[in-house]
Image 1 (cartoon, rainbow, N blue to C red):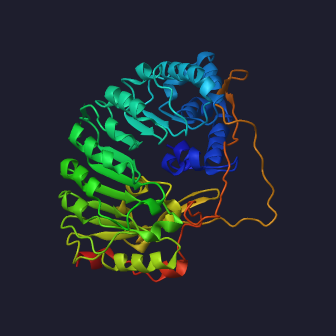
Image 2: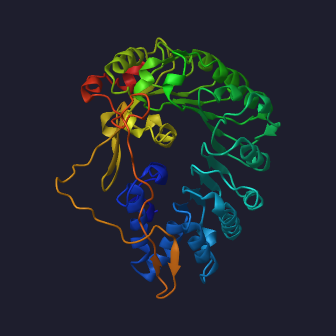
Image 3: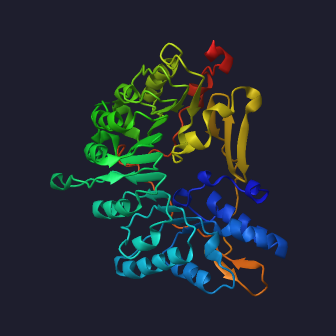
Length: 452
């Protein structure tokens, strides 16, 4: 418990969006390594803390991690609970990588979380048998092809508790899916593009999800390809079948410069979800939505475009007891946190009901604060001539038995940000949050005022 308090919660750290060796993810890894180097007593406790969440960030790390599992005098594989793959896999290396991944699963029988966020196709045939029976939480990138997706879900569906995937874009002639039953699935995250959303209808009619309680719909792709008013017809047909037991619904945004060109009508979705308690709204939601049972409403902050902010304010002012009779609280989620789609559930809305309840997650230059009515980031104060601190070598999970209580790892991160803003509709806006003056005068009602 003490060790867990010295690093940020895992849901705040995403290796796929943390560039450079000074990212929060890399600093957290260095902190974990420092713990096991203190003494033998700390090593025995800290080693499980270090290995419980493993990320393969370069294709060569898989072979090194596999050798670590095979050549140590303790069973490190028993400590691994979560495995994330985020690396480029050359086509000529897919067979070797697949075999290495298979052996990693065989030596790590307690892996329950598997995330494949690589932009490359998953070499699945050899890996799948080793995954069956252990995976309860599955996250897949948009690089997963339709046949691979169906192959995975056909084998894993009966045990999955949470699933995150991107609805594939496929030819009309292939728009069929086998009947799948997910008896234990409680959380579903669907990434949807303007072209892939029509496949939701096939999913709705061919998937049985009796225990579904939380649904997140991520509107992906350049908004210029969406119609001006997104009526959510394909989404509402999904909710009509699977929304009766939903308690949480989230329409997650991507902050494109062109997002001001459309609005979202979510009322049909709300009408199909009578048990809904927690609603998270896209900043471009067409006001006024209404629901008799919703207790908590989160709304993502507007885009920096002034026209977005004006429309957003109309939406915010309509989040009242008149439209939500059971309302207990409203929060604004700042746009800089949009890379954390599970933020609303990991930081529940009932935690801060007054100014005295405010809290923050602070780790070096990472700071996320929850005040009454809003969740936001606090930017660090950078030194003008700050020099790069560098890296100590690798982000590999390598065990060293020389002294019985040390590890040799590296903290270098893969990838770097590149930004092309030559065309306004061809990039994702990086300066995500609206002018603070737009949000500063928002009235955040006390919980007592809402209940009255």
